[in-house]
Length: 540
Image (cartoon, rainbow, N blue to C red; front, top):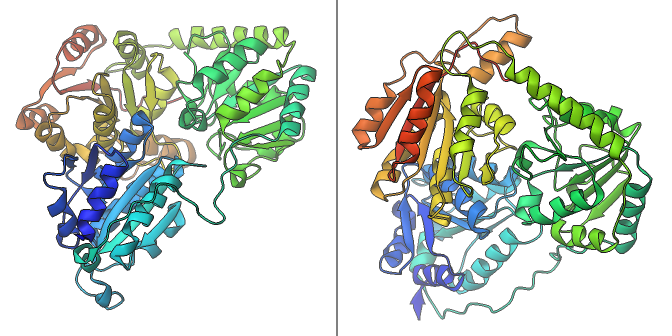
């Protein structure tokens, strides 16, 4: 017989979990007590939200569910934003929360909140464990659900008395959940319809999303494009699918995307959506698109197909398996004139960008991102936050490594904790977190996590003294009347770095950029680089 808490730890060991991220409290204390000496590394973040984002970054680099932990009440509610962020981006997480004792449930006792009820809209599944005998089955199912089908967060809420109860521990060898059988193989008839549509289209286009990375299908999708010659654009979550300079890649689409990508979407006669939800930030007028184009939608989640864009040929299945099926049919396309037209537009757009006048002050952010990417190692991990820094990063990322950001929820403060988790999943890869001065101040407390656990990531602040994206919205849609976007009162970021014992540098003028980047990249430890950007700089 072992305690429920010991059983919970044993479940993590059975799943091969090497590291977890969390913040302890009274109702999760029995579990933490058994975690001590278990061999599983625990990373104490400075907020529960940081733990959730760190688990997300870990999951995205490792391919395995990330594990985050909190206590009940405010600990759990602090974790909710990270869970919702992971849900929107389809990131596999297993969130473990402590809960008040079973006999106290519903009495509004200290630090009680209906955790499973509150997170139900933005989790893939939730469990409230009422018996220690269920722990093995519940954990086995939770990891299976989080990592299969459309991936996402699963929450396990464990009352403190269940953690303390004794049980005969059994960990199931397999999982069988009635009604949960994700379809991974595409229907052969639908796959043949897609191959035929490719053959007859004059202006075919592939739009790749984050589902390609979740399925680890980047190489296969690239092979499909190169064998058929079909041009490619990406959503925000699909950035990095192909190198920026690839002749068949035409950039990110959407409100903040490239002119070439948006023109390609509008003029295509066959649009193949691959692992992409294409929400309102990607395609604002789907009705216009539906009127003239054949639309193929490939997605593991049938509920996503047709949600935002009417679909002509729906194709449910895992991207890897569906693209393999499609390649086996050896589809052909004759779209050379279409390729050449888009290529000419891409060239003109690039020339126009390079001829833009220099900003009034600071460093031009697009030039900064391109200069940074050129110096990064091939397998570097670039984590962008939310705001103008995200758009500048996404439009100009030209590295050959991995690009991470949050696209669905757009949660400010994501980059630093997510980079911490990503670094622990792939410690040999240089990991960079790029944020604005607004988003940095939402998670700068995680610098302490970097120091305590010796996780050497590089943090870059694109500092313009404003909430730049909101300022742009107010400029465009509200007559330029700016309210609540000034960040005066911000600290001296260099002194913040000094306080944590982190090396730092600052760039105020373009001519200082090269030396500062070299200084940062040659430093093996954590580093903070601050770069001044003109407050009026936009993302267009």
